Length: 118
Image 1 (spheres, helix red, strand yellow):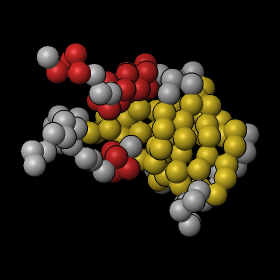
Image 2 (cartoon, one colour):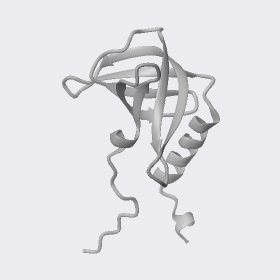
Image 3 (cartoon, helix red, strand yellow):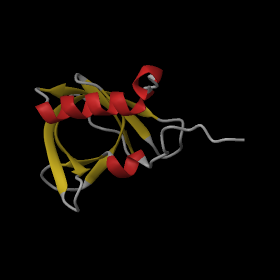
Image 4 (cartoon, helix red, strand yellow):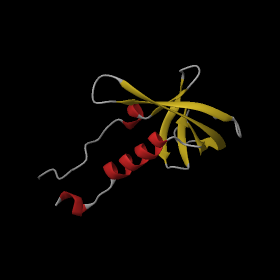
């Protein structure tokens, strides 16, 4: 049977790790993101209504990393179905253009648009 997969599987947690901007310690990884907010999957619950200064370290075409700094407030947190993991919902505060560009790129990458293949 011919493999018709058009999108390769990637380890997204490797690419979409979120770090504390001041300590450089990992907070978790992005489970979902939009221009308004994100779902963070982490090994611990987040403090509600706290403002977090976060950083994404995105790979570039070379061996360098591109940092995207942003702030977000935790609106909710709950234990994930996976033991030892927590899901937390964040509202982005004045997201930088890099976040909007990343959201657009992820939507294009993971969309199934047959017209684009023609």
